[in-house]
Image (cartoon, rainbow, N blue to C red):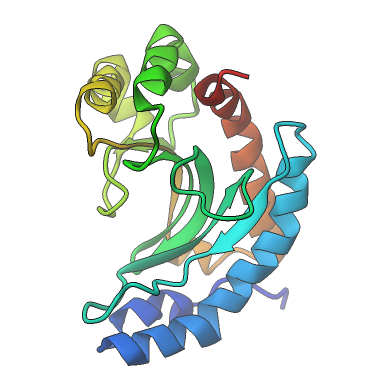
Length: 208
């Protein structure tokens, strides 16, 4: 049997009660996989010629009480910190895996990003129907490109422009049961294709 990359126990980490126990499970089961993905994708993203990308595995270091409900490895062209920049993430909630391009509330250029994307909204509406958009990285839910439509996408972009804490995420969600059925090569091919599809959006976001 060909080896899979993700397992049911990976997604089950987010059911582990208590901060300390969940953090231990994350560190033992999931963070090594995020580190492997970081080693693979930082050079691939850097080869795009849009800057040298670095991998940042979420440490959840500021948490003192509530255990994390999701976790990720982020990619951005910065050695230290990534939240103020448009960045990519591969991560897990208990219900699904996500591969996204994210502009979150720390980004200082949200108005400019919003205007560039609104000017070229067809770039977003033209994404495959299984791609998603969201306005909040703290919530697991998202709307498909198909369901959001141009009107829904423009509303998210207008909010990004006008609301200080607004965010914009675009990418793919993969249900946990589908992720665990994939072989390692199938998952990596899925991730490869997702990043390639999001590259033109990244170029528009960054004005490159």
